[in-house]
Image 1: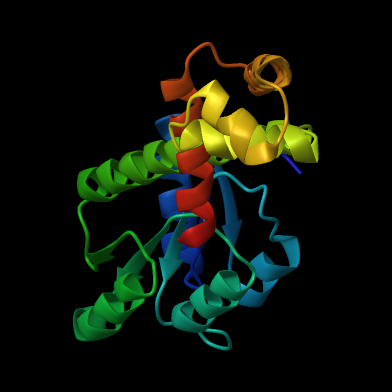
Image 2: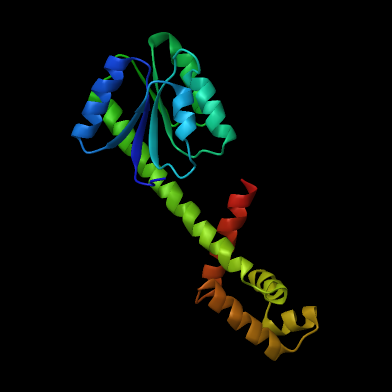
Length: 206
């Protein structure tokens, strides 16, 4: 599955879909177009990057149902809904469930293109943050249980002699563990270590 930023266009109206795909490709976007929500789901992967432009009213699986399905699959792909005038309350509900924006038909191409560019940029930023957090988790998993104990006390701001007393080990042993923690985590300062661990903790609690 490619991770290249792509605009995933889900629109049942052939003329609208073809026209918008042509516009998007003319300004340099890679586009994958679908006429049905279930067809997109068959191809869906959490590795997909970019954004979705999704019609809210479609026969069969509508846009709201597709959004629910994607949420259940832990998708972080930003969704921009395309709505008719009477669909605005639905679009507002969709945004409460995680959609990033919506545009009303008939829409100005410039407006939609601007929203798409913002969504792609936001997706790239969130994926970079997730990748960084994944690296931190991998480094944490490389720590031995004792190194993890020492690290936790380091983050609490305890001095080496206090850590030694708490863990009933020598201060020299603490210094060795401390150096290994810093090396394995790839940091040079305690402040950097604290920021890394806090970033992972915030992610797991959100």
